[in-house]
Length: 178
Image (cartoon, rainbow, N blue to C red; front, side, top):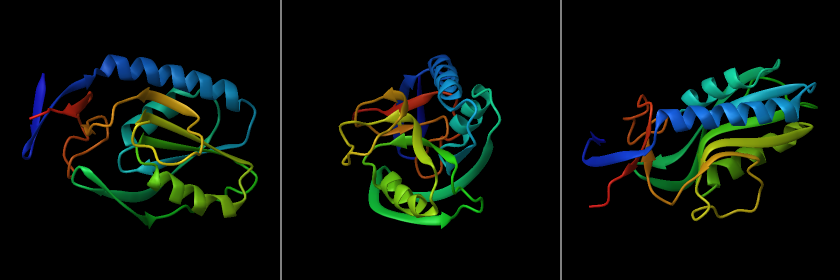
């Protein structure tokens, strides 16, 4: 199955069933790892919204949830220039922070976000991402919870977009090779 967004054609890469199974597995593991802790879960908008909602439902424990918005993409390429669009209003000092991201590829956005959060003195910061592109990753910080490692291809769906389109797709699609 394929979908056309603007001028590009994408093919199914991960089914909604594969995604949901993996999200449940991640949620259970995170619940065990963080049980009894004072946790704040921070979703990185816009792309995380579907994964964030499903993951938070799968983490069966009390938690505070909030969002931050950063952006480094234009079209299908990372600009490698991170803009924080709106920030965190919750106090994270002394708390265990779990950042939820849709995708970590080059790692620039997350590196900048970590640099902004560390001075707020959380007890710890962990990262959960649905998708991780090890071939594109340029840093050495830990990505603690990974849904799927994927090749360095452009993907859309399940929150990820191509110029704002495709976020509502329940599957994840990869760009078709021309």
